[in-house]
Image 1 (spheres, rainbow, N blue to C red):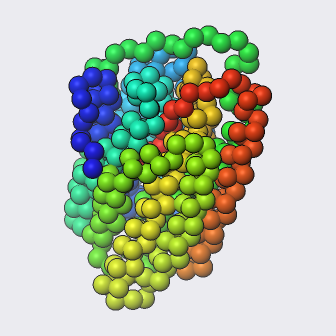
Image 2 (cartoon, helix red, strand yellow):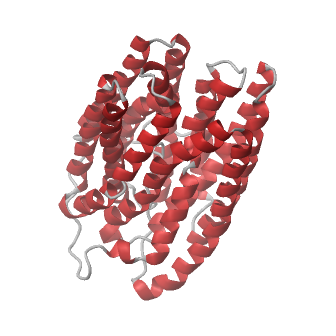
Length: 414
């Protein structure tokens, strides 16, 4: 299990900012959907539609802001995105209908996508000889923060009052603002060197775009834990409500303990492609276990759900490590932000399509939808090694040898 903070220096500042940010994220990841359905009283279908609209609106933001971070300096750009997230998230407490909800969640989702792209040059610059390992470390620290936020969210779900849900939202916004303030202690990072050629080179890289699309489909798996399981647990099982937080805590503890180790075993694009394939199989197994929890005694439902979460988390570890390796091993150093912004399109697809798709399949349709979702993940994982081979085959012709680095998380949790 990694220490909470690394040795003094820029890495400690980045880790501290990331930790505070993810305590707030843990609050909302665990109970955000329930806030809008239980406190704002929006139907689950409207929540899925609103999250989808917000995801589509954020698709292009990461590319533009990532390019801006490459050209203008990443620290200030990243800090600005955190401030915008803080204001937008606090606005959730004022949302009293569908369109105010869409406005607030659209601003928050766009700022999150922009922040993931803007943070990538900082990770590459301050990550040392092996930025991949520092990125895996950051993901482990992320899950420490999320686990603390999930503990507080479990109390909110159990209390189930409007005041408690609003306190959850305000706490999330305060955490984002504090994260931005800590980031100001980081040394400034100047813009990258000017390089000739087309400005938007990442958009011309067809193999990279294909990998982006595949990773985006696979990233819908993050919504299984934060959207599908909470709604399924409350609506279709007799398991206690506090298990909503329990499933998130189990997931985060496993990620904290194992993500760095998983990242060390995936050290090439080819290994990343194989990890995608294994992840798809794990998601198929977990999605096949979850629907068995309906119509069973509470202890059986809880056992099945927790077992499914363990299997799902193994797939998540492989998926995350594969994304860390593949997306940045194929990105030129001078355009890290732009390439990570393009790769963030996959996260945008997951944000836009994931909640609505999973609600339609797994909640509205029910048991058969879980098997369809698992099959989708498995087929995506099987396709990834082919896309990696295509990218590696064309890479020597398209650009000079690249340094490896690490990507940001598409669901906001990595």
